[in-house]
Each structure stands twice: as C-alpha cells, then as structure tokens.
Image 1 (cartoon, helix red, strand yellow):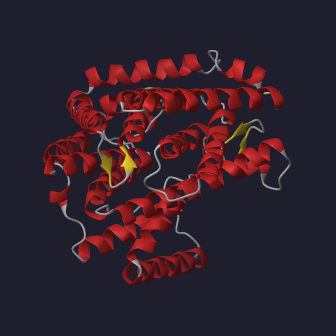
Image 2: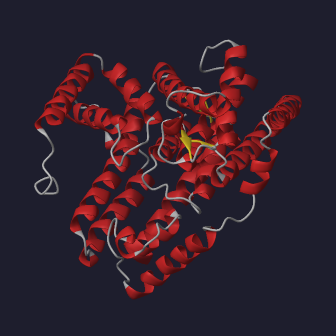
Image 3: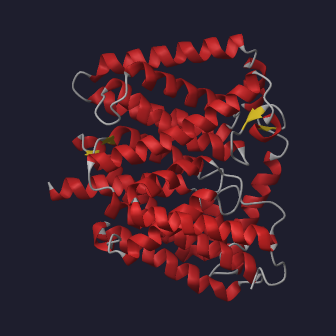
Length: 405
C-alpha cells in the first residue's frame, strides 16, 4: 500500500529481487555463512531497513521453514513478556492517525523481537558463538577504522563517514548509533584480552581492534555512547575484579586504557572538542521538552498513540526509549518493557556472578554492555537497535545454559 503511491523504478526492483534470491540460495546452501554476513552488515546503518535486515529476514524465514527456529529455546519469562509487549502494541493501534509509519514501525518491532527469540535456537555451540562475534567485530572494526581515518586524514568519502565534518559516524547515519554499536565489541575484546577463550586471535590483534573501537567511540563525540562505554567498562572491571586473580588484570587494563586515551586526545588536539561536547548543548532543551510531551500523551491516551506515532504528533523525536514506549503503548506497554529490562538484567547479573559464559562469550562483557544500553535508552531510541536484542538474546542463552547445568 505504501509503495502504490510511489512505485520504485523497475531497475532497482529487479536488482533487489536478484539480491534477495542470491541471499536465499546462500541461506539454503550455507546457512552459517548467511548468518555471519547478516551480522557483519549490521555495521551499515543508513536506512530504516538496512542491508543486514534484508539478509537476516531471509535467514529467519529459512530457519522457520527448516525447523531451526524453536521458541522453546528462549526462556519462558521472556516469551511471556515479549508476547505481552506485542499484544499491547497491537492494542494501541486504536489510536493511530497515520497508518503507513505505524505499519512500518510495528513490523520492525516484530522483526527485532523475532531476531532476539531466534538466536537461542542458533547459538548452540562455541563455533557458532565464535562465528557470530567475529562477524560482528569485523563489521565494527571496519566502520570504526574508516570513520577515524576520515577524521585524522582526508579520505574521498569523508562527508559520508563524518557528521558535520567533526564527528565520526562511520557507515551509520547517526554518530550516536554508530558509537553505541561499537561498545559491545570493545567490552568483548577487553575481556578476551584478559581471559582469552573465544576468538582464538593473537593478543596484539585483540588489543589493536580494541584500540580502533575505543577511538571510534571517543571521536564520535556522542555523550550517550560515552556514558554507555564508561558504565560498561566499570561493570566489566567490577565483575572481573571480584573473580580469582582478576585484581591485577583489572588495574593493568584500566591504566593502559586511560593512558592511551590521554595520549590520543592530546596528540590530536581533541580536548577542546571533548570538553565542549561534555556540556549541555543548545538542542537539549528541545529534547527534554519532547520527552515531557511524550509523558503527557500517556495520560491523554491510556492505550497509547500507537506504534510509530510519536514522530507524527511531535516535531522532535522522543530521544528516550522509555518515553517512546510510554507514549505509544501507554502504561501497559511501559510495564511490559520494564519487565523485559528487569528480567534480562537479573539473568545477566546471575550469569556474571556464576562466572558463566554464552559458549565462550564472556558474561562480564555482556552485563556491562547491557547496563550501558539500558542507560543509553534514557537518551536515545534503542527499541529498534538490532544490537540491543542480540545482547539480550546472548544473555538469555547464558541463563538457560546455567539452569540446565
């Protein structure tokens, strides 16, 4: 219906169809390769629907048809909470004013939830966990290296890789989303450098990749991503410090990271920019007003405005996942979302306290990444952030493994 008023040219349609058929063939003949390709392409975030989504939708379809999508692999409390969240989202459709953005938004919500619920069926061995993490790190390192390179040296596509010529955004549209995408990788590499057990990479390579991702986070000049990273590092170091023999490693990692960051900031003359971004910006007032407006809508429309309607009724985006859910799905939707956050956090803490891992993916890094993402959700919209659901799914897998053991 949406395309009927603006039919796309025949050429791009044929090209997209050929690409989807090629992806389907890949998913049938080499399923793990198709998954790795979809995860690596998460490093491109320019559109509402990105290349990674085209690949992963085909992967999900093939998994469902071939019996590789088993909902029973996901923890039962998560199934209940996500079922409630989807039901409330459908119920909130009674308040929709603009149907096209609502249909797109609800469709993407269903897709990211399906992605999260499918991963417990897929990640069932150390080999698959390693393949998943390596694919993600490859994409993250590439987009970070391109962005930092464009900032420090002239590149042909620097207008694509930089936001307003001063902030690194890599292959993403928004530097905030770009930097938040890198945090999980930095935390996984930090834990891998201290306790290698997953990636099977030489330690100098692990440290080099960690440095590239940290530089990307710093030079994005995203305050939300900085908070995300700092919280993640603090949680990671706290968990590792409580484990046997972890104190010395934690001190070494903290000292090396702090010293390296200080040297980079001084040598690149970035201290002034860092100081400026750390203060309140002129547009923050508008963001806070939009959040206040969203909270007010929940009292006017108890069932919510409907999926994707916040941007229809407000001149500014919510810049908060919690405010968006409250405004669009009402108090019932916010309750379901908070239950999801609470249950997943409890599982992540349990995994970290047991010293468990998700087939080698460190529970300390996952807990740190999850805490950072939750706090980040106070300031940016993360409901459709694909990595949020991947981190959550990896936590659910670790928790299920722990209960089985």
